[in-house]
Amino acid sequence: MAPFLPSLPIPPMHALPTVLLLTCAGAAGTLLRAGCNLVAVRLVGTAFPWSTLVVNLVGSFAFGAIVSLARMRLVSPEQEYVILVGLLGGFTTYSSFAFQTTEMLESGRIGTALAYVVATNALAIAAIWAGLRAFR
Image 1 (cartoon, rainbow, N blue to C red):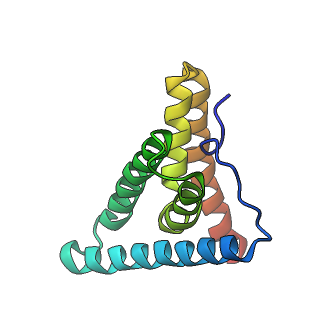
Image 2 (image 1 turned 135 degrees about the horizontal axis):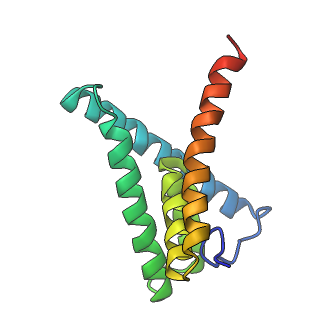
């Protein structure tokens, strides 16, 4: 079974430097996403969610690239963790979803991958619908 994230040695969360790095990386990812939103709205308007599409594609590419670099030992496990969980976690969570699905497909678990894709999309849409109606 593929892990939810690459096999990362999780740094001790009680270690102040780790907490600070994750906090800063998450904040940077959030600011990058906000910046992408502002630029997209100015350049192409709001008729199509271009910013979300670009953020998801860039985040997915970056996720794959960091995992690949870590597998080649060009990025340390600590750097990989901070970038994937902090920076890309603040930027997009779609990259994790795309990576997990790819891992399932690469390991031959096509049915599981298909179920994950359908369930994630259908249930996320249902959850948004429920959330919108919960406080009307």
